Image (tube, rainbow, N blue to C red):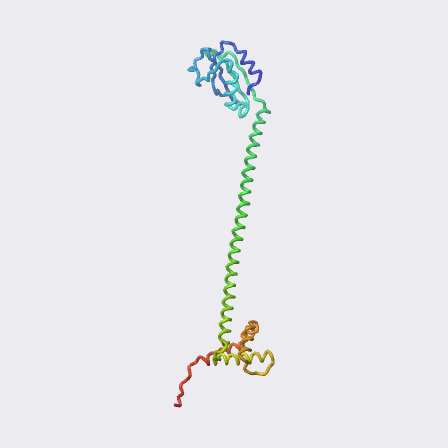
Length: 252
C-alpha cells in the first residue's frame, strides 16, 4: 500500500516522534486513526482516537494497514501522515497520493465482478424460463394424451355395445338346431326374403332359416338393409302384430 519513499520517510523519523496521525480523503482529509510508538511516552488520552500501539520496526506495516482500512487508493486518492512528539507538537508530515492507474484498475475489477454477477443472474433467469416452457409443454402433452385415451375408450365401448346389440338381434332372428321356430321369427324371415329379392332380383318367397343365418352373418349386408325406412317399418309391424294380445270376438 505504501511506496518505498514513504518507508524511507518513516525510517528517518527522529526519536522525538511518539505517535503518527493518519488522515485520508479527497478534497478534504479526515483523521482515521492514531498510531502510538511503544517506548516514546505517548499518552493516548491526548487524542480522540484510541491509539494503535506498535514498536518502531512494525510502524511501516501498521501505517500501511490503516491506510488500506481507510480505503486509500480505492475510494480515496489522498492521505497525509502527521508525526507528533509526546507533547503533541507536529514534527513532520508526509503527503500520499494514490496512482490513478491503480485506483482505476481496482474500480475496473469491481465493475467486471458486478458485470459477471449480473450476467450470471440473467443466465439463471433464462434457464428458469426455458425450464418452465418445457414443463408447460409436458403438461399440455399429458392432458392431450389423457383426452385421447378417454375418447378411445368411449369409442371402444360404443363398438362393444354395437356388437352386443347385433349379437342379440341375430339370436332373436335365428334358432338353435332342433328348436321350434317362433312365428315372429318366421315373419321376420319373410320380410328379409322380400328385401333380399329386391337386391338379388330373385323371385319373392320365404327364405329358409339357413339363408337368414347367412344374411345375418354378413353384417354389412344386414346394416345396409336395415337402413331402409321401409324395411325398418316392416320389422316393427311384424313385431307389433306378434306381441299384441288377441282381440276378443264381439260377435260371440
